[in-house]
Length: 146
Image (cartoon, rainbow, N blue to C red; front, side, top):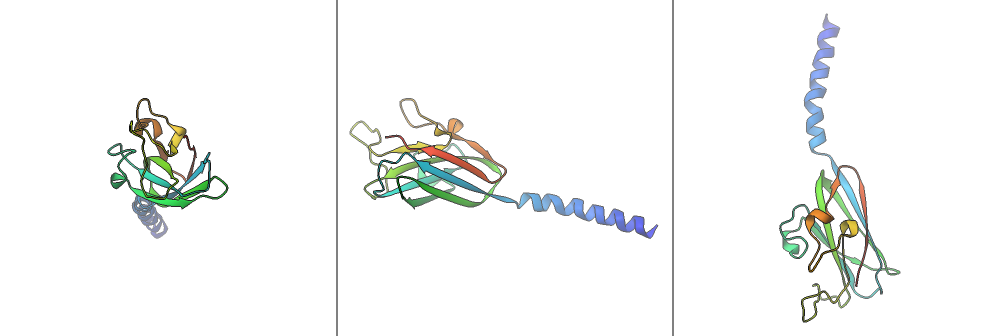
């Protein structure tokens, strides 16, 4: 009888603890960026978990980083991400001024890219086209377009 009580108590304890552990689980996102036409400047990588501000308002992003370029490619790593939907926007900041430069028509004059290699039509790509799910350690490969 005592063994059964201990077994049931142990099972209840694990049942109570498991959801707490699962909620706290985080994952790593690796973003490989290629297709850069030079090692000049840096690549700005911006991570969003919602469509508000994607991809043009980095202040509404979950995280952002600036990465050095080596041999016309680079990799950004975002650690400790909770399970969820995300989208990445990035650009080749060739002149290292911290912003995406545009021409007189408002079109990017520096290389740009998005997760899923999503492309926009008469504007930037939409969150729904660039989004992906993080529920394990995840890798996104992005080719920069000029």
